Length: 145
Image (cartoon, rainbow, N blue to C red; front, top):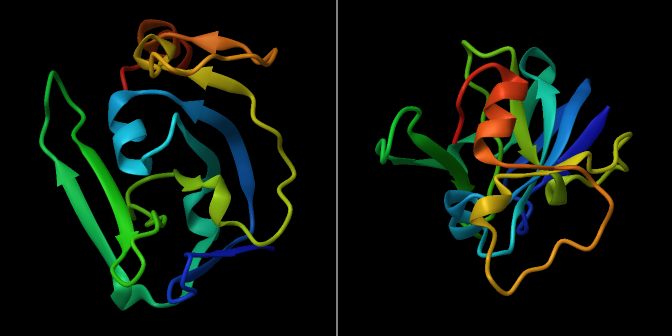
């Protein structure tokens, strides 16, 4: 069981099955929603995810479609503002911000994605594979973010 929580601890969750991918996303929306160079997210089985405390503190922001679908949705704790996961009941998996986990993860970051949008002041100095928007869409079989 992998457990995590927001900064203030009001929202807590657990997930039984981490399946990946573990990605570092450099798209503009992820950078702006995290206030950082990239969003580090881990894929998990949606049916193994549970919010164990503070569901009433989870708020959702939806950015309308900008270029093309899909829209961008982010969830956060209404007390501290931390990004928090929220499972879509229709989805097989969800992305969880990696920094929320209290337990050690079984994965390491696999790749940088949407690198054409990375901040001009950032340099990617590791040996992880890098993917552009088109490359990651081809890898996944559809366009995202």
